Length: 271
Image (cartoon, rainbow, N blue to C red; front, side, top):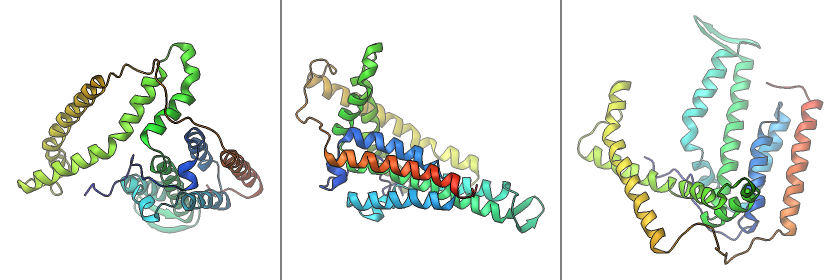
């Protein structure tokens, strides 16, 4: 059931996106997340989606793999789309019965928001798909290094965030095993009322919490055995360097964001 979820996983490769400086990749990922919310018309959204497709092609990752990242958020997409369909009353009425009012503007807004959320998640997933946890930790630490001036332990913060991201696939796999074991013992997790389903989750959550604490304790012990004492005095085997391709990527993202802003002024808004 949960085995197809790929959030937080790293897939090794030798594409241009894999070789890109992790610091630039992290910054541009946040820039793309912000840029996805700029378009107010179909042309702007098409530019953002086209840029995402081009980036996926650069990563040389299978399209099926990227689509798997959307699986966990399908309920959110469906719920958001339903809200927009039923609560946006502008436009030409298509269906009107009791409290249900469906209009052309409601359908348009629902489709626009759904595509925006899908682009957001797929673009964010490319960061972890093409960047190893170690490299991501180094990139986070480098980007947050100015915060050392306010006595913030940047290394431990970056390490904590990356470990949390790294263990998402592990927890998903553990949850899937526990659910399979409970079903083999006759547990019914998919039928009954809402309260019955919530109560059925208790035999899953308890062993999952126990397993999570055990893994955290084992990880802490392993780090202590390897004499880990934080970032003080630590060196790095691989140094990060910006290349010409990184500068080109920055310029492309800036031009894309500028183009989206211009399109908002030139074309009429959809939502």
